[in-house]
Image 1 (spheres, one colour):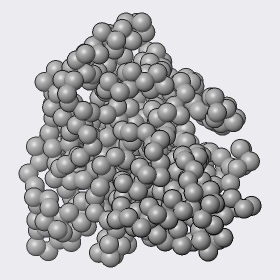
Image 2 (cartoon, helix red, strand yellow):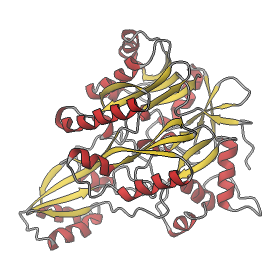
Image 3 (cartoon, one colour):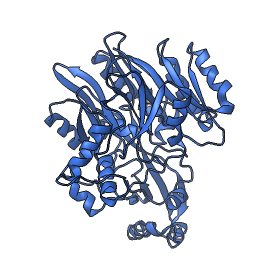
Length: 469
């Protein structure tokens, strides 16, 4: 997915958190050949009959968590980690990646919650993130015992590509790899289907065409069919692959000039937006619930519903994209329920129009020249203040679902109505009512605003390694 330049972004948003879920997510920009594939939609596998671990079905028996030092020593992040640990049932198995120097602290969290864990130490000099969902897919080989962590061909975010091998050394899983592009958060696993965000299907298709993946399209087979076959052979041999995305590129620009009541804003709305996905990972706006009355229920986020609850306006929220995706689920026979999802700005910095124009004239700031021109046309003067507003998503879809015949229906739900975001408590309450009405017991987790500002929430910081009945 195309991202705006880091230098200009850091100039405009100096308070941007590090270790965002989108960091280093740099596959090819959307080009004409990629657009052309939107409507089209053999390598020997190491696993004979791969089957993905469910995103919703059965008891949550084993979780992989990753706690880097920056999170362990940031109170807001540590509170989120600990709320997940504390919410899980006694007997839940944990595999925990951590920096060596933090072992005592991290182990204490599990002891205090009455849990034990298998600890996977990483040297303090190795960087990794807390986004444990993304660097691999968890699957089993049907008919065999044990879980595999299937890695994509490359995963450039921090040192997360080292985690699967480390867990294999210390834990009860095996690591393997596929010549495909995917991230765990862009995949959701249903009963007889699994969902993949269209962006990464297109990334794989483009890299096959460019020769950057070590595979060749067999004679007589189209690239699209070949890539689908690769996913079937390496990821899930029985479930139907369903792509989730819009039919056309979203076309959201990196920067917008906004003039309102004599105030000037430079809006940066694209944080976390994909090429044909309103958020770069589908686990941020789609939730799998389970069978209801013979149809599979999915929740699909709606910025419009959040605006209605909050009395706000979200001009860059891409509501039509969410509606198009919800309609495509309905066409396939899914039972679709819409839920609030907020697209929210914060004021990052203020600078004079003169300073902004001067920066735009440097090589790093060249991509700001268009928006500077638009601000000038809107009446900005040399001493006018320009308010820089980056936007991010607040999502309750990114939760943990446990639809189990043995332990009941449970949902582990992040909350956001805290401190300066206290207005979001009304949606915290609405989401609890929604899940309760669907027959689930709601377990409220801690304040996850510090995660959301980094483009992820609670589903992103864990990996289901094993589920029961």
